[in-house]
Length: 224
Ligand SMILES: O=C(O)CCC(=O)C(=O)O
Ligand SMILES: [Fe+2]
Image 1: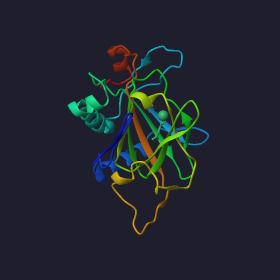
Image 2 (image 1 turned 30 degrees about the horizontal axis):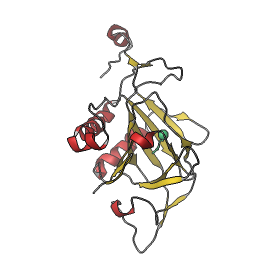
Image 3 (image 1 turned 30 degrees about the vertical axis):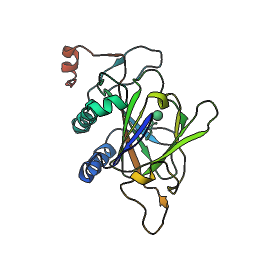
Image 4 (image 1 turned 120 degrees about the vertical axis):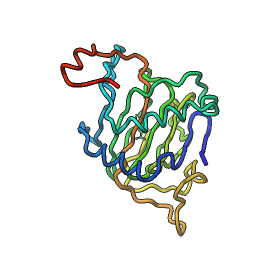
């Protein structure tokens, strides 16, 4: 059962547990870029911050299946209606973020380079994502993102802020999607310690450019 408000949907158990674990394992072995407070991988290219098109780089094979599954899900009529989209754009970019317990991401918006339907798969651990009003930081929603879940940020919430606080555990007693959690807490134990979470944020970069096939061939790469 999914939880939806205008601008956000939470779909628990979007991936079966084996696929979720497999994604986590495969991404763990990828080439990480170290930031001060987390690690990340950019898949599909690097989005230039001066508005130029992104030069497309190939997707690893292991992400193809989940990419198609997300695109097929968005393609469903009911979903297109909900997200107010006619055409589902290709999810041509993925940001893979790794959060160790105590790590997070500061409040931000994703910006104008992307289409405004953002699909995130969570693996490894749950974490609370807060959505706040840009104007005054008022908390709009706290959503607990469980392993295997798909969450979609879109429309009117795309331009508000989202953040993950740098905590060692999450208190899920008052999260907005409590009634739709796939693993409701046992014995009223609402404080859930974090483990390593790896998230996969699929987006459509509006403006892209492919390198000539002959050039990619010379590098032994192909764009899929
Ligand atoms: O890890 C998440 O769920 C959020 C990631 C995010 O906001 C981003 O990459 O822009
Ligand atoms: Fe973001």
